[in-house]
Length: 401
Image (cartoon, rainbow, N blue to C red):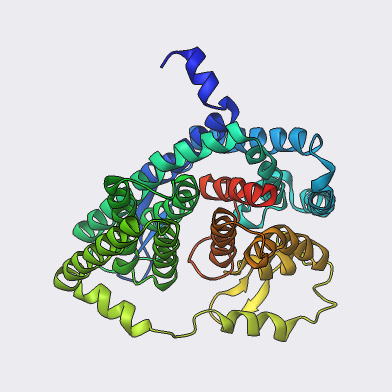
């Protein structure tokens, strides 16, 4: 394919955004390192940070937000409500950025990761995928990157087990798993409703690489996300009897093989996952927060560096639920804007009698993302990275439908 054909078939800006975020992810994984926790046998992982990773992340983010802003201001009046909500959310986050930067320094705010208020400007990138060429480009790249990331996560998992053994929390495996699943969300939306036998096998096998990684680390939430994604894919392939039957048979066969392999070789991981069952690992954090603060205390938020007293962690600011975290740090107006952006279009498409199957499937994927950033995943929230720009693209497509 020459340059002229490439420009004709691919949107260069979308390729650049996804490519740079992929470089950022690669640097995080390959340049990071494991260290042993003090007074413990367990390991912890520090993501790789380098000039290349920082440059690729900031460049991709600036391009995504910039192009989204330009296209957003050129959009049809049909999207006026989303435009108004995004402007309000951006204004609130910009105010917090200015206040926190003046009090704590610009560098400290930019390095605050998931509590950085500028992260939410990334929602402007949803306007990029409203362009058909840009969306098709994202889907083509997702269909390549998704399986690679999930297979890589499983390879990293076995590598860690062979070197260190045991369970670890935040790690390159989980990072790759989260990015891989969200990329597969977008890839699935690009699949036809009558995929070939080999494409069905590739898609389902890729997802089960993610399930195997999640089982190894006793991760209930990503297992649930993977299973739901497979079910949505089977539903999408159910237009024709032959494909429905073949997809179900393939899925059942792969499930059996994966289960046999895991139960035979990873019994400790499987026992740990089963033992967790339906245990509650979230609500204690919400109880601690709302016992310390009233609605009016949190109406304006506590800012980027706001903390609460945690029985486990002392003064703590991270909350494993994006909705609660945005409310805690940036206030009631910000969280209302966020919920509108995340839920309005998906719920409307899901409930509307006029929605086609493709529309409903797009809404299901956006709902899965909402669950993923609100507790149905681990070490996963809205930050500048590949998974979130991919899901912003999916949200933009949902809004357009």
